[in-house]
Image (cartoon, rainbow, N blue to C red; front, side, top):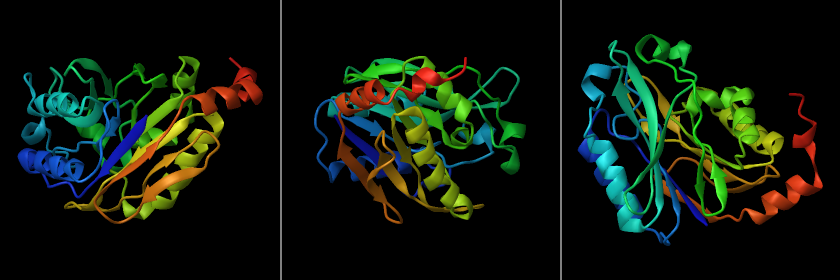
Length: 254
C-alpha cells in the first residue's frame, strides 16, 4: 500500500483555497488505487480558535471534498475539520472516506491542547477509531495526542498496527515531534505516519517534518520545510512478523 502524507502551507481560514492546494499537490504525484492519503489537522482552515467562523454543519464542504478526493483516486482519505457541539464548543475532528465516497468513520481529538487554550474552545472526545484498509488496522490520532502513550495502547489493544498522526505541530517543539513519533512506533510495534503542515499562521511557525516510520522506529521518508506529498510503500507482513517474533505487546500489564 502506498501512503501519501500531504504537507502544505495551510491558508488561514480559507477553505476553498486549501482544497485547491491539496488538489495541486496530489496532481503532481503518482497515487495508485488503494492508497492512503493523509491531510493535516484542520487542513481546510488552519489551527484556529475562531470556532464560529470555521465550523461546518452537515452537509460539510470539507467532508464532501474528502469524499470526492477518495472517489477520484480510488483510495482512502483522512483529513481534519471542525464541527460544533450543541453547547457551542468546537469539535476538532478527523473524517475518513473510502473509494466509493463512503464514510468510514470519524475521530474527535481526545486531548485538547491547554497550552494554546484549545481546551477553552474545543471539547475533547473520548473514543478511538479503528478502520481496516489494505490489510492494516488503522487508528488515526490528532496532534497533541502524540504525547499520551496510553491513547496508542488503547489502539493496539483494539488491534491497530498503523497510526496516522495528523497535526499542526509548531517549530518551537519540533524535536519532541520527531522523538515521540519514533517512540510510538517502537513501543507499539506499528507503522506511524506523522503529517504536519509548513509555513505560518497568525500565532506559530510550522516546519513540516512529515514522515513515515516503520515498526522498528526507522524513518522511511521525511520532508522538512517544503510543500510535498511524503510517500512510500508499506506492507503489513513485516509488522506481523516482528510482533510474532518479539512479543513485547503480550507483556503489557492490563
